Image (cartoon, rainbow, N blue to C red):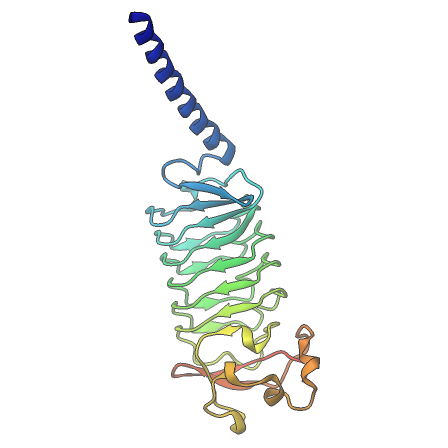
Length: 253
């Protein structure tokens, strides 16, 4: 009996030790960030690092994951400023979610190191300005969400280096005009939000997403629009909600 009891005790102890070692190995494998503060889950060769609503004030409170490709979710924290080179060691990030923080400014070079980033979420922050160099280093970006901020100024070249950008979400800001010089290398259909055309007169009052390419640029065949936008179309005046915007649309017109 005593021998059997000892054997049972050893079995339980071995199982607990194995569990602890397995947990420690996973932490070591994924990096220190994957502790109880930021649960990590690997699926389809992508690591999701969930650091939402953790009261994080500074990025120095966490460390880069040790994984080739990962999604870093930092929404709902207390970040108020992004400093130069803060993401320089986060080279594996393909999605970065910074929504619902308190971000008021993004300094030049903040996104250095994020060459492989495809999606960036900055919604529900306190940004007032997007500079020409705000998104420097994000050559692979395809999706940019900056709605529900206080943006009143977008400098002309803020998006000019984002050649792969497919979706830009700008609604619910304090924009009065995008201006005629804003360089957007995306099609008009990539602007997400309620966009109502003001000019030209023939399109007045119509939702931009309901306007066909042929109506927007009637001088060319529909097939011509399947090419990637390269050259600028004359400015089209549109409004996001009650805000009148001069939307520079790039197409082969």
